Amino acid sequence: MDGPAEAGSGDFTVPPHTDPRWRRLVTGERKGAFGDLGLRILMGRVLRVLAKDPSEVRIAQCIDDVHAYFEKFAPSMTDDLQKL
Image (cartoon, rainbow, N blue to C red; front, top):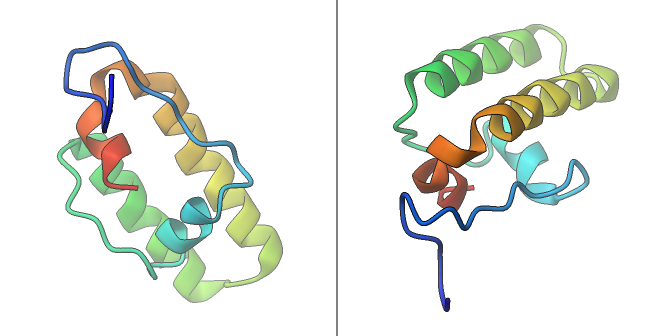
């Protein structure tokens, strides 16, 4: 299949923790209008946490949290994965 995965196609890949898209996402540099309610809630929490403590350690923890969420729910999040 060429191009992004279509919803329900089963073709999805969560980028590794080291992918720079995660850092851009958790620091708010990359804004996304995500469809998944749980992800929107998680991203709100992540942005509040990093507003108070933008240390590298805290950024890494937030990347881990968001990455784990995507890993857990990837089969139902193909549209949101494409927005990374």
